[in-house]
Image (cartoon, rainbow, N blue to C red; front, side, top):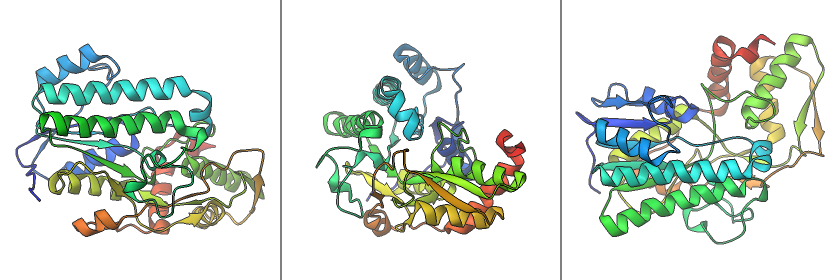
Amino acid sequence: MQGYDLRGKRVWVAGHRGMVGSAVVRRLQGTGCEVLVAGRADVDLVRQDQVERWMERNRPHAIVLAAARVGGIVANDTQPARFIYENLMIEANVVHAAWQAGVEKLLFLGSTCIYPRLAPQPLAEDSLLTGPLEPTNEWYAVAKIAGIKLCQAYRRQHGARFISAMPTNLYGPNDNFDLEHSHVVGALMVKIHRAKLSGARSVEIWGTGTPRREFLHVDDCADACAFLLQNYDEAGIVNIGCGTDVTIREFAETLARVIGWDGEFACDTSRPDGTPRKLVDVARLSALGWRARIGLEDGLRSAYRWFLDNAPEARG
C-alpha cells in the first residue's frame, strides 16, 4: 500500500462549513498541510464553470469531498429532485475538475444509505447494488452511488488516485438541529433539552423506536478520513464506523442521561422508521489499522456541551 504524505500539500476540504467538513479541517491542522476552504461566494459547486475556474486558480494537491445536500427522512422524502440534482452536480463537477487539474488524491465521502434496505447485517462493502434501496432516501443514495462510480471510473480510465469512504450515522459539532430536517441525533437533542427546560415529562420519538442505528462521533470520522487519505489507494469503498449499534429508544435514553432529563418517551408510529437496521462492517478499515476511539456516551456529552455553547436552539 503506497502512502500519501500530506506535509507541504494544499488540501481542499469541500464542504468545510458542514459537520463532517469542519471536523476534517480541525483534524488536518498540525499535519503539515495547507488547508484550503471555499464558501459559496467563492465557488458554487453546482456550477461546473465556477468549479473548474476555482480549481485552476487554487491548484489543490488533494481534496476531501465532504460537500453535499443532506437532511433527515422528511427532507429526503419531500425534496427528491433537490437531493438528487444537487448531489449529482457537486460530485460530478468536483471529480471531473480534480482530474483536469491533476489533483494527486481525492477522498469522496458517501453514506451508508447506499446499501440495500434489507442487506445482510452488518453492512459489508460488497453489498452495494445487490438489492432495492430504502425508499425514503433513495434519491440521495442514488446520487452517492453515482459518486462512487465516478471515482472508480476516473481511476480505471485515467489512473486517478480517487477513493471513496462511507461513514455511518454521525453526530457532533456543527450538526443540524432543525426539528423537521435534521437527523435523529440533532432532533432528539433539541427535544430532550427543551423538555428539561420546560419540565415536560414526555418526549416524542419518530417511529417505533425499534430500528437499530450505529452512531459515530464526527471527530472519529474525520480522523478516519485523514487516515484513509494518507494510507488507502484502492478502487473499493471503505466503511467508516465503530462496529456497534443501539435501538433508537436506547439511544434516546442514553442522550436523556447525558442531558439530565428523566422523563418518558412516546413513539409516534405515524412517522416512518426508515431502514430497520444500519450497522456497518468495519473489518476492512480495521484491517488497515484504524479503529474508533470515542464512546457513545462520552461523545454525546461533548456534543451536548457544543450544542449548549453554540446552537441557537439551545436557548429554547
